Length: 234
Image (cartoon, rainbow, N blue to C red):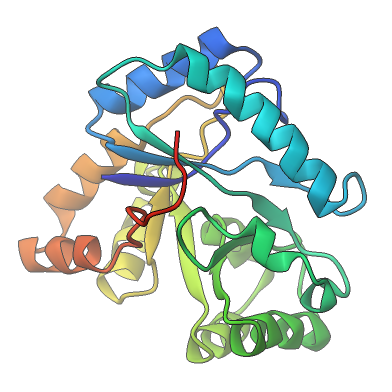
């Protein structure tokens, strides 16, 4: 099973604080049946150029690579890219794709999106050979009616949600209904540490399997991104 959103690289962002913590996150994920995990540290254009970000990511990944042991999930490199005005025009956007794919994991503002912002996301989707995947879609729901999200879905934009969406009694029913309607396309733990934000994707998968028809779950799995390309991986 794929975890497409995590912060497991040591000392890269507000996620794992050490190689030891990264290994604990990976071991816990493996115990929950996770076989592949995307390391998606935050990218903020106001802090780093894409080149500097990639250099720093490579250094942090190298530390983890030295400590990996058999039985852990395969780790693929990516980024959680924070939306900024003009993002559709930067030349290096492809360098931030999830490894072996054309997927851009995009974090949108936690506020109502303007028409211009929606149009810019659609432009990325339609003009740059990029598959936009909106990160933790459940966090935007309080700010929007369905129109903005439906407009992006109509353009081919896909949606990722976090495990907690299925684990909270307040949101579980809504999460299941969205997955059944095909409005959720990928799952992530969004794990940061072993205390306040540990890996819980395995728990969420158990909830899903108990809540939806087997054919629905199989179809969801069948349509998950394939990370097993020829590119480099940890």
